[in-house]
Image (cartoon, rainbow, N blue to C red; front, side):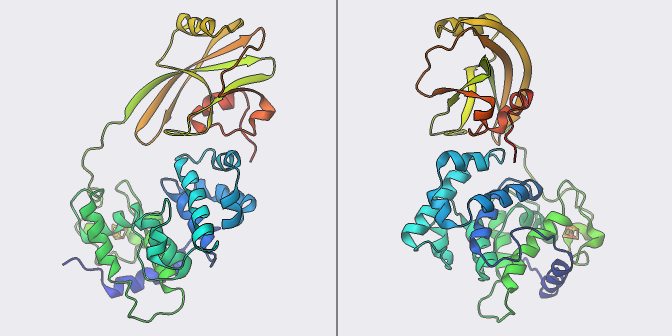
Length: 359
Ligand code: SF4
């Protein structure tokens, strides 16, 4: 049977209390901070989240403010963090908490699980870190650490491995055993912190500084470069696009994306499917009755989403006059563009024209 010893759990907690990082969402007993940080941290590195978290907290300090936030403002605050459906779900979650729980995040694991966008990992994290309840939270860091400690040689992304790890660490979240206040809050963060600081990915964990080195299978057997095991990654789909930076004097033409799908509801420069050559771009502009004064080829760009890679060809088009727009299109000056959520997929073009919002 897979076992994580009591001695190693005690060693982990001692190591955590001596080595943990100071983070803006730590040492708070406000579950809103835990909810917000956990949603931001999904698929995103801690270093990248810190400034976003501080800014979001300043502008949207609690559940009531989040439930009422204007969608455009929400997207602006999330701009650059990626995975925008997280932000939309976070707002839905706040509305649900307002309507069903009187604006208070429920101190109950089952109720947490019923909230929009909150799966087993987030429910465990909010329950244990936010409320000091005995529920584990198994994220990628915890899976990696435990796969090495236990010597798990199956694909780390499989449901079976997640179930095994949850069961093993879950035995140390036992409500019948009494602990000092803050025990589960620290325990959940200790597992994650060990993965973030010591048992790091890519085959080079810092075992000499690890509290588990005497009992860890991968360390003892010198298999840290082989575990965690991953079967071959699915190949990412490549999508070719053409990005048209259409300008008239100091204004740029942008359009709102559809409310569903990738980057839903955000803004983008006008685009064409596939990489168009200059003749094809001119044809599109003629069909739209744009009066073109100049057209230049500009930088190509690339953006990687989780399952798709965009390969973009860019053109700058200067118009002689503004013409009739479609319903989802608008003209905005560089300054006005600061008020629209332009995703970082367009970073190359945003930077080219200095359109990045000042944070
Ligand atoms: S001993 Fe090394 S491989 Fe094992 S858990 Fe610690 S850092 Fe990871």
